[in-house]
Image 1 (cartoon, rainbow, N blue to C red):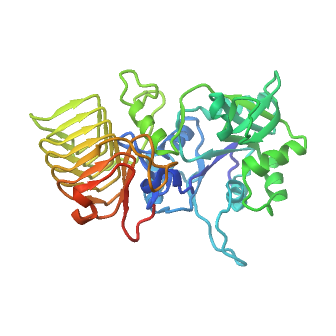
Image 2: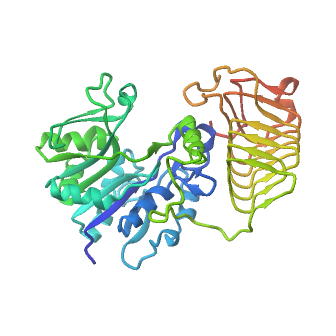
Length: 424
């Protein structure tokens, strides 16, 4: 087999439960982003732009759409005879059938795949972050430091530090301590969940820690490397990086794309973001349509008003409809004179005529205050909203709803309608 200097292992099996009804039928890395892309397009594009042509994608939760999207890797130039992109779902072994139980356990279960390429280095990535990074520069840093493990890290606000793995380093950026989600953080240098391991060190740690329950990089592998005097270094990254794991961070990251000078530029010639592009018709904007500062996907038809919004492909905005500060994913129809304010609406939803979404005063969610917050209305895919109803803020809807589901024609702020058979 051809030897590869570095291969990438991309963890894309997460459910993304903090995205609520958006991920009830689809894995988080397959969620749409920026009107045209899916979240996983970003790490995959980073790989090919960094010269990495061998990527294993580890899937688990609701993998169908992710698998279809990646296919054989053509959009990312990853359709290679040797290497390329390989989907790695959990599989039945002769003795047992095992789900991936933790990030490191998933990598451990694919030791055979990595052995095929006998790499010098393995890059471990997460499938759910929005950023651009040249992994080749990080690899050069890893080599120059003579490191066993290099962890990409970035400064975060001190008040958010307890959400991350926190690194404490000396003047040479060598990591002297690592604390996973500490209650009282002593540094604000946060691990980004991007690691380069020298292959022998990774293999040794995975084999030694294989019996740990839910074996995880932050909880088990990194501490093991410390205790065994491996050389761990922090590679500080100061570019744009967004964990879009919550509805509010997902909404914010989309809204940042439409700034006059976006902090994250999708249109850079030198660092393209690639995606599976369907052969679809161009968009149509009618003479009466009004659009301000928005991204509009291909084959979308606009007859109404759109302001400060990100609209996917194949969406229809009918006459008199208004969409403001919202994200609408592909193939959704917004009926005549419907009003949508600060909502995230998934694929293939139908909004009835005169419906009003995002009205009234803010109230906390009765379903889950941690997930449904920031005044957002979240509507899961294939849902139906009947004509003439009003929907308040911090609400969640999933499934085909009927007028009788809305007492007095209203779903109050903080309320939810999750139809039987729909996950929350």
